[in-house]
Image (tube, rainbow over all chains, first blue to last red; front, top):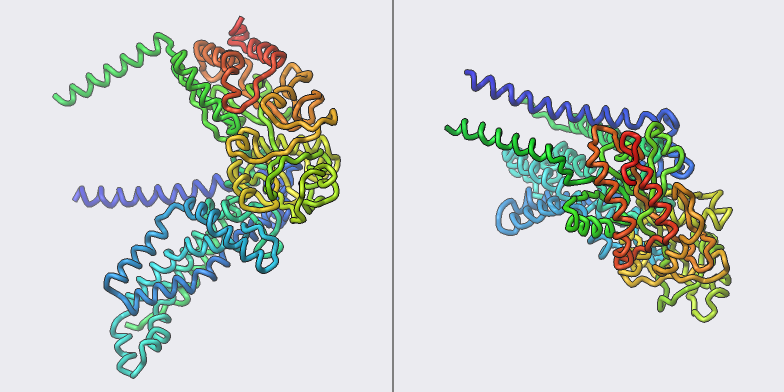
Length: 291
Length: 349
């Protein structure tokens, strides 16, 4: 009896600690960004000027950089991760090939991001530069496009693993019913499996997006770190995470320091916003089967 | 049985720490700050540990972090590549923060063009390139300065530091002195609003981009350029001489009048043989050492370390590609270190 209560209590305490840490982070981010927000007001999020010399700061270039790289990465990675999940969830559920691919995909997520950054810098950047030379664009090599490519690869496992799991969970009776009506395999995937797994796939995409929004090291290494709003997708830019990584250590001025924290606050808000939005969409799209 | 053992163990440990405290054994000092002099400091503190048994822990977290930690009084001293300005110093009004230089560094202009010849550059051309006004390597201004070099018609790609850094501070300090337009449009600082170019993180990041991009130009520390065999330019100084950055020419750049608090920029130096983009790096500490329950022994050990750094330590500078302090600067630094007090009384006599 006593043991049961102690167990329950320890569970509650553990959960409370997590909740407290979350709110403590939110509060210290808010407090830390107050001086900057007082100085610039809400214009902070819409001003494109970032000038540490004259202490004028605006977050817009980094907001644009973060959103552009994340969504571009999502668009590039989606066909790949969905193909993996359909193949592994429908066509090749078992076998050596399937288990190899599964562990490979999981391995992608386990590699530290600095290694992707390094690989990007050494391999991907020269590749993109050659492309740019062919197309007559200024051959920087680094930039939004390169960062998105790296990101798209890094976020594959997040969507692929989750989507595969929900595809595997689609009830066999549903599929069998469709087959018995004469549906082909393609038709079953299109009309039964995917619609049923829709919300799980969306949740996977959301996880990917969260990872892409916050990814710092790999992006910093290949994005070109230019604090202006990018003129095109091949232009060097900066994301919220990368500008913090770049400038935090040497930010001596109070307003400067606070502005960087405010960017962190903005990143926190953006991530939370997409999280809530995603949850809403998932709820809307979940297929409810009458029992 | 086992409980008794643990109690005994704890008692023993308590007695041991009590003993250590009674002898006043200060065994370690802590510092934090600039990354630029870190290789030299690491070497110094290693030698110092062997000589004196005092362990100095220096965390290279960046000048900004060093200043912040000193202001928070979590370290014994800070290291900074850009001297603290009056506004920053005003954050400790009751106990003034002092600076003394430890070594000299320089910023060199490096590039990637066919053959990587040694270029000659003038302040006007450098500021023109970094402002985005000179955009091609065969610009007449560059060709005129380097008639013996065959310059390509490539576009110039500017590479700068993306992280806040003392290197950027020194470089922009120089450009602000030699170009009114730079001073007005960009100014000086550890991070800037760059008119053109790409950002690379740290010296390796900048050098990496330059090595990859044909037609690029950027700036890195002399020590880094030397170690990695990067080409670099001679720069025309105030006397009209083209000076190659060497350990000698950066030390010579410091042969100017130094103010008593050593907070001075020596870029665009008046010294006739001095390289124009050189700078000191500083140690910062509190003048009154009795703060936050610090013991006299600790203060004394700290001041001894400082004294060692500007005297015995200097012999190791050039091995690690840092400039030595010239004699007049050492004299000024001595005065500053001697002005440190404990309860108002000088620590060194």
